[in-house]
Amino acid sequence: MTVTAMPPTETEAPPKKGRKRLIIGVLLILVIGVAAGWFFFLKPSGPTEPEPGEVLALESIQVNLAEGHYLRIGIALQLTATAGGGGHGGGPVDGSKALDATIAVFSGLPVSEVTRPGQRDVLRAQLMEKLDHAYHGDVMEVYFTEFVTQ
Image (tube, rainbow, N blue to C red; front, side):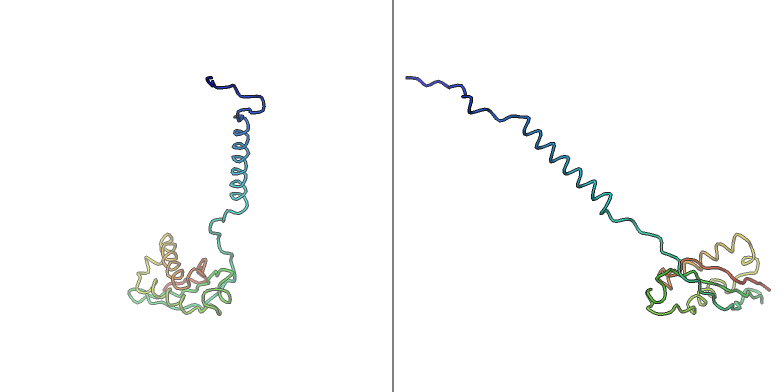
């Protein structure tokens, strides 16, 4: 007697392709949902701008310029909210570093360079760069409170 392949009976149905697609679709939606939730709620935000804190006004100083001239300059430092007690120094901000940086930037310059309107912004940027280094980012801005040449 030869055995031939018998057709499947009604109790033995072949696996349906629709069920696989349904499972894959549900898993895909679940993965997309988790990724979207992470993106909108848990994704770390980029660096934020520091909050402004107090403005520390320093006493005016005289700086020797070229050819016997001098500059009387006063500055104020816009500190971050974390400067001082919560900042890198752990205590009140010491203005001596800022005054030293001011002397370094302005000393020996000709009067014409100091009084030229566009050049003042360039000198402020140079001073700000030195202050950023000296105070480890605790100074947001520097303001000139007095600027007199003779």
